[in-house]
Length: 321
Image (cartoon, rainbow, N blue to C red):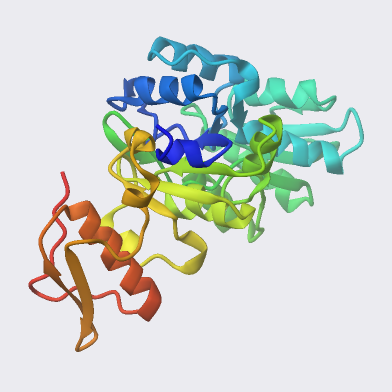
């Protein structure tokens, strides 16, 4: 275990949707991997952009999937969003909530007043994912934002991984309000670094590792926070997205899923890999060799990021399970 990836860091910050589970379906091996981290003495934190559930609900969900957790190990974008509101508003200020009751309760706990209808006294709008968000709720928020209310989006994930596939996420609803108001919200969750910084601080960590499946939120948030990250292919990220990733969305390591945390760190690092030679020919990436397709992808990403060439040659294909 001494050379395992998790042993190289003083905390592991897990994304949830697409990384630990898909809705009600756990990623195979996730409970055992989280248990291995705990047994090694590495603190774990669960950092989610999904603002629909309170920390105790997240704990109940994780426990039901075989991963017991404590509420202080859970950090949600609802908490981050309300933190931004509390820093900017007077106590008792009215906040129009577009989201679940859990988000409204978080607003109330911060000493602010959650409301569901727009009025002249509304000073801010907070928007988080809820499967019950309606046109009427968006209309109330639209009026408040147009009247000058502060607008905080808990996150801007366009999609939400589920056991059925990708579903519309909070970012899709945020996009509707952005179109209707011509206003940009203040974003609380990933890719802003606040969630990761708060989670790392709660674990007393100075060298945490982020594990996530989305380049534009999990990995971009890790880059913004200045910490290393493991990209997993169990959720949203695809080989094409990885090869074409901009500097702000590039991970440190790459694996099929989070169970790789118990594997040697150097086997997972994105970079040149034994058995594969990747060159640039006629502005395309050409790979020669034999070995693991994940190693091929790690090597392709390395050369693509170094050269800016992202087109694959006709004979270069990445086939992943």
